[in-house]
Length: 273
Ligand SMILES: NC(=O)c1ccc[n+]([C@@H]2O[C@H](COP(=O)([O-])OP(=O)(O)OC[C@H]3O[C@@H](n4cnc5c(N)ncnc54)[C@H](OP(=O)(O)O)[C@@H]3O)[C@@H](O)[C@H]2O)c1
Image (tube, rainbow, N blue to C red; front, top):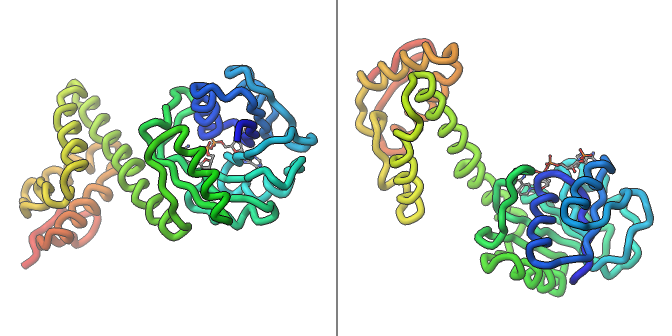
């Protein structure tokens, strides 16, 4: 599989281009709803841009890397030259049946968090594949192994759980780290003060069950400390994050069998009688 058409010019598509380019792929076409974005991306890597509704070049693989909700529409618009091409999408939460108008189809999902400005090498990242036949799975696995040796075959149900777990591990933790960062900044404390504990948190999470190393006032049932934190959260950013503080404290307490009671969002945490 050396000739590839990428549909999309966003974060996933541009990181895919970067990884193909690094590994010496030359025959790559890019099509996108907004043609100019495809042209800019293609130019960056010496690839070719093509209109979505044009007759497409003969390729071995089509990667549809567009917004999840647009996958089927885009698939319906594609006019492929050959039935031999494998058509994949890149959305963990979507069934491969969205592409069932093609003879050979599947999924090529890279488990990462991508940016359009800073490209990520797929070498360290898990790649999940699924296909509508053993032959397709075999081809997609072989392709994935060109990028990374962490290749998995997962069905839709497994992918959905994996994606949900990734939202907790990445999206939510990043949101929480952002809160921590801005709390420090607003108190004129250097952000670096938190770096060792952040590093320790993530390093430990990779080698233990994070629940076994949980610490903090909610776990200890330190209600006075929780109360002070909660008051502080009400004074910071108009109290926007106070509710989140309560929810997380309660979740920690509940998970570890510690009794805490929050009577209303405007009242302080109090120990259950
Ligand atoms: N970003 C990640 O970290 C990541 C990780 C793994 C998988 N993925 C998957 O990769 C896929 C693309 O995500 P992304 O992050 O690259 O999104 P993105 O940066 O927002 O780019 C979205 C792309 O979809 C196109 N698009 C949106 N609506 C469309 C429509 N109605 N018809 C045709 N094209 C349309 C956009 O075209 P225009 O340029 O014309 O707007 C653009 O090329 C998604 O399935 C996502 O689940 C993303």
